[in-house]
Image 1 (cartoon, rainbow, N blue to C red):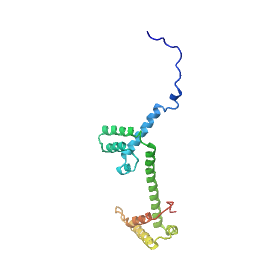
Image 2 (cartoon, one colour):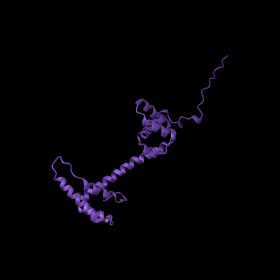
Image 3 (cartoon, rainbow, N blue to C red):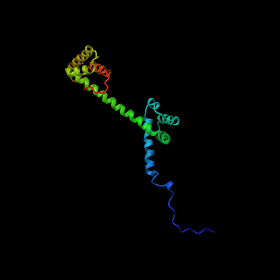
Image 4 (cartoon, rainbow, N blue to C red):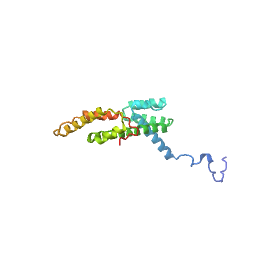
Length: 190
């Protein structure tokens, strides 16, 4: 015979299972998709950069396999497997390293743009050369002036070229390479 039903209301769940402590199902899915996206970024990296990351061996092998797979469905499954393995990886450290590489590239680009600007100012006027010599008194002044003169002559010759002819850039580039060897501590030449 079945036991009679108890008419008492259901008790509240214990505090250990409180909904406020557990992330919602949506939040868990967002986190998993973030790991999946991070896994996709890792798969897109060249092997030399992957070798620099602190990855567990199974994850490293799964990423290498995903890079070799070319069929769409097989690659999709492997990407999801990489995402699953990412749950055990230190995602914050990996994300920090990827961000450092991305921002480092931006910094290098900014530094190159500053050097290009300095090169253009050196070609345009002697005031920039005076400022550069004040900042770097140990420079070989004669060699630098010879490079600047050659770059100026090259720029004048390029201006006189008929349309459609390729301008010469040998001295222009050589001056840039010389400027790259200088040690700009604060990365500005102004």
